[in-house]
Amino acid sequence: MAAPAEPGAGSPAESGAGPGAEFGAALTRLLARRGLEAAELPEAAEVLASDLRREPGLLRRLAPALGLHAADLFVLAGLPVPDDLAPLDARAAQWAPHLVQDGVHLPAAERGELLRAVRSFPQQERPADDRRTTWIGVEPRGLRGPGGKVLRMFRRRNLDFSGLAHTMAVVTPSYLAASTYQGIGTGRVELTPRLVVDFAALLGIDALDLCALTGVALPQPPPPAAPEAVDAAALLWEARRLSVAQAREAAELASALRTEPRNHYLINLPGS
Image (cartoon, rainbow, N blue to C red; front, side, top):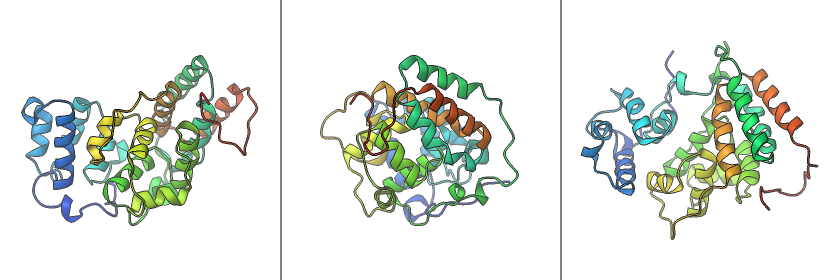
């Protein structure tokens, strides 16, 4: 069954022939940032010359050529994310923040062990009451612009506004309320360069690439993402394919591996 259209998709800037003005401009900026012309990347040239509403499969071919996730490209293009690219079980979202928050504080060897454990879970079938009937599967209305697309990318990683607020506070220096992230998604709160850098770290996307895709300029090149953030992004992405029972098991493993005392009142950033 095809995924339902997402509220906010099909805006004037994303309608008409071709991939839409917004996505076409974002893709052009990304290629320029990498020092490429569209003609040098046949997949990109094909996307720029096509109507993605009729040929969305082009994004699947473009994603590996760009080193990006296909699900993210569908979001950036303002198209519904196909079922096979969506998280397996929306109910697993309740465990995603716990898995990452505990996992990010583990030593490097244990983080690697946790990631291998998550990857080793057998693939299960999508539950009968799939993602559309649960709270994370209901797309918030009013998400728009670059901030809205970034927030949709996180929802495709099983993080809602609250989960994102808790996870960002541990993985990055950004410590904001869930309502603030909602404001970023609706355009009421500015998508700042600092936020783009921190979002990129948790999304597992190069910060300069995400700046090109969102159209946000950085005053200076950012430092590399911390190793803990790199591992957190990989863990969050891999956990998308887990059932709720598997996600709970993975979160419990992360908690068991973490031996340091937890402070529930202070933000404990890695390396701080």
